[in-house]
Amino acid sequence: MSERNLLWTTSDPRGFRVSLAADVWKHIVAQHTEFEPYFDTIRITIENPDEIYFDAKSTQTKSTGSQIYAYYRARLLTGEFENDMVYVSVKFVQENSRLQGYVQTAFSTNRIQQRMRRLWQR
Image 1 (tube, rainbow, N blue to C red):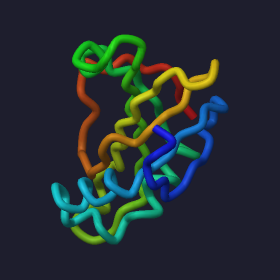
Image 2: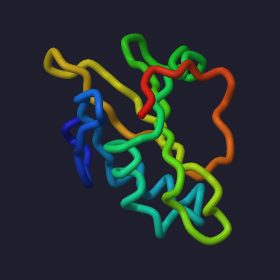
Image 3: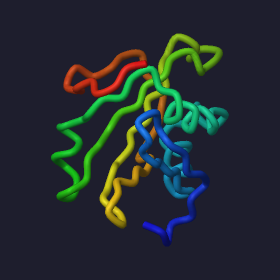
């Protein structure tokens, strides 16, 4: 995925690298226009989440070897979304003998889906 225009790369609390590509950011704001002012909250949610979950159902729909994780963080949004959490979906793939994560989408939500399996909690 090195041919993509990456806006940033950071690490999550477990030490895994996660990147946001420009085309994904465009997709996020096209699908969730209310999220446009919250560009930095995606990186903050990855770096300092409240919880990280494994999404087995979404993982099953992806190519072999990739895994989908959900990052949640509360108290980052304002206005009508202030009671919501930031949800960031990250696809991890094997690259150069290490796992690399790529943001797939992000939006506000008021619940964690029951299908998720918690892996990490602050």
